[in-house]
Image 1 (cartoon, rainbow, N blue to C red):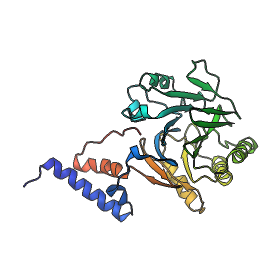
Image 2: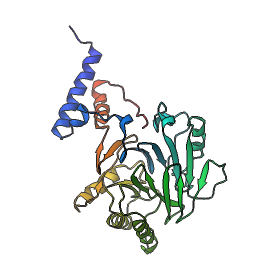
Image 3: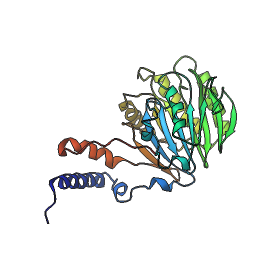
Image 4: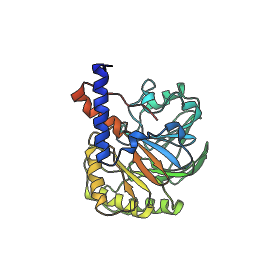
Length: 302
């Protein structure tokens, strides 16, 4: 039986991808793909939304941080609309700078039955939005939330969810000058929670520039908070900086695993204190598409 040319191209790409991943020790990601609907307690799927934007799916919740560039029609790229009403959706916005906040997020209420917004400044909205200042603690819809005062604008969020602890720093970074305003808030968090799973910290300025002080601040935060996993962020369009930092961190033999994203839609699975990338197969197939005329797939939400 002959195989149609189109199927042969896809099959060849798949086989080549399998070989590449086998050689790099990643073959298990193809043979046993993670079933996203099976997210259990203490597990999470993390998806990069660009710059400082992240979506995190846990057993009962979906958390979205500093998401810009997604309106109601493109919402399916952030979350899986077929299952969204089985989860409690919470949207966090650290401050109102345009690279962190877009009013379009409030249109998502048309598509999501149970959604809450938590913002780090005083915003005139309805009861669906919780406005928090620095050093506040709130319980909301099964979440425990603490805030810190950012060294720029707004706040950073520490969130307890489904027996996980996540910290999104917003624009909290050691931008230069005295480190005290940065370290004081990190020290406060270390007292609030001594077991943090995942942290997201700014690596670069708004114009995508790294500095010695920012890097020093990140390593200070890692040392004090001792998270299992750290993701650098705030370098949208210059994601190669994330990889550079991860390579630098690896030389320090940290107990914290530093991960990096190179593309919007990159996903990771966090289980039992370990983290693995989910969509290596998709990325390799996309790269192969230029040679095999495969259609480049758009990524889909959690």
